[in-house]
Amino acid sequence: MTTKPTAKQYRIRRSGPGLNAADADPARRPVSPEAARAKAEAEALAARKAQQAQKHQQARPKQPAQPSKAPAARPAGGQAPSGQPGAQKHPASPAPGKPEGTTAELEAIRREGLTGRQLRMARRVAQKHGLTPTSDLDAVRLLRKRGVDPFQRSNMLELVVPPGQTDGAGNAEGQKPRVQLPQTVPTPGENLPSTDLSPADRRNRQISEIQQDIARRRKRKMRMLMARLAAFVMLPTLLAGWYFFMVATPMYATKAEFLILQADGQSAGAGAGLLGGSQFATSADSIAVQSYLQSTEAMLRLDSDVGFKSHFSQPFIDPVQRLSADPTNEEAYKTYQKSVKVGYDPTEGVLRMEVIAADPAISARYSEALIAYAEERVNNLSQQKRGDQMADAEESFRKADAERRAAQEALVNLQLEGATLDPEAVIESLRTQITQIELQILEKELQLAALLDNARPNQSRVDGARGDIRRLNDQLDELNTRMTDASQGENSLAQLSVRIQMAQADLATRDMLLQSALQQMEQTRIEANRQVRYLTISVQPVAPQEASYPRSFENTVLAFLIFAGIYLMVSLTSSILREQVTS
Image (cartoon, rainbow, N blue to C red; front, side, top):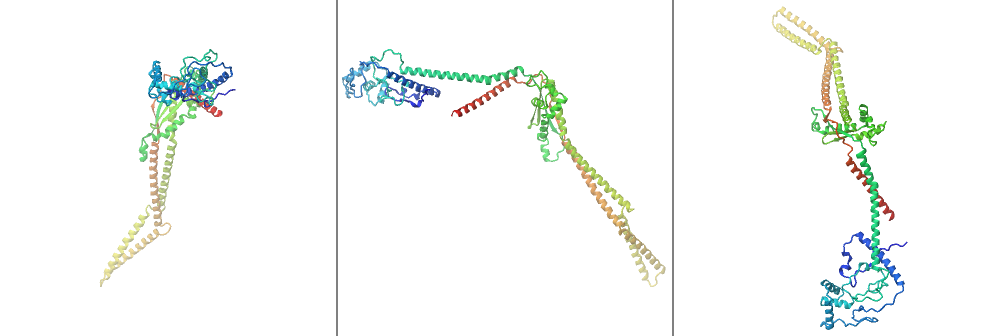
């Protein structure tokens, strides 16, 4: 098996005699990368086939060459090479005075009728070869003396020559040197009819075949690409569109919106007043209600009250959306998640619910039942907390009341035990009586002293004063005895008074505790009332008249994008793996 030679094995002859500036620089022509690559491969293959054809032609027997009557190429010195019968000797380049031979040559060139473009081209080629012509006609004359035809163009395909197979003049091995002078008479023996094509035609034909082969391969790859796209993208998209437009059961959606509000009340502090009226005060309750409406518990309750599983198990629903005859809770919950959609907007605090069913009336019933479940759940969210707080406050109040009652009973029992209601008043009364009697005794003693100061006191008055003093002293002794009995011993009035004072202090403390418990209970009742949540329906559920689902066109476009993305990912992955394996 012969491998194709790469383009690196050949070189392009960029400059040479007979090549103008536009033809010698192919980079000036705008060529696309794919065309340049294809052209390089075609030229390389054509050069190899041309080389094989030249070797085959050299192996054939050659005819004897006939002398040519056309003037042969002359060297730069102006003398014809030896061995050419038709060669004429020309003098060297004339002197600056231009002799008659030079003038005749210029006149002959003028009579050829060359265009201005050809003359300018001749001057550029002469300057390229280092000549100094005096005019455009002189440039043509000097180039012809050098053996260079200034009007001959070179084919770019002829420049592709295998390395090491050119002579000094740039001709390939096995080829006749190119005659660069104008030939008016064809060389005998070289223009006979032949079945073989010229190397240039053969190369052109081979390049055309290669280009046609590349075009065929591109068309085949394009057909394969279109077939894969049709099989993996278009066909699934058509099936999805057929299902959405023809098979899918129309579904009706009922929408409702509701909010969870907090009860109005006196705020307990600055923080409560700042967030009490905002949506952040009930955000936790809204999220809890949203989770409950999307839970299995709500689905089971809806199925027991309205009949969720039986509705989606009806035979007129398409097989993709229909439940089995006896679905499990997990299967029904998957359909419930697709049919009941609840969203919460934290910026506005609004819960938006969308309920989908095959019948508009059933959809509205489902929505009303779910809103009732949500309202019940909202009422139960803070009920336990409020009940616990009120129970604790009431228990504290009852305990304080019982203790206060016990302290009051103890005080009454102490007062009844001493047969006196106020021992302090009794003791104070005794002290007052003793003080009065002592004052009276003092007065009587003063009267008695005044009577005794007389020389002859009245005996009766003295005896009366002394009798009064004696009686007062007896009364004083009795009061002192009573006072002593009241202030000493376990059952003395002093001990009873201390116990009564302690009981009174205990009763005052219990009164304060009872008052504090009562205030706490009232505050707890206010806080419990503030924690009450209310569900307010802002948008009532209304049964729809037109089906909301399926959205056939949008779903078909989405299916196309999904299949196209999957195909693109698989294609890129396979291309990368193929490149890694081959490298």
